[in-house]
Length: 41
Image (cartoon, helix red, strand yellow):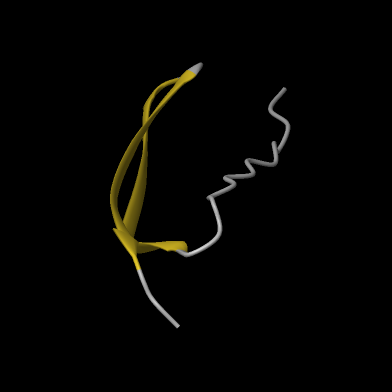
């Protein structure tokens, strides 16, 4: 039986993801690939 899970990623203020890829490696593993950048207002 599988259940859905919620994944929450929190960043410091002024930062954002330019690209986020999520890949399941195994039943109990995931791989996150992301580019993090800082923006100015």
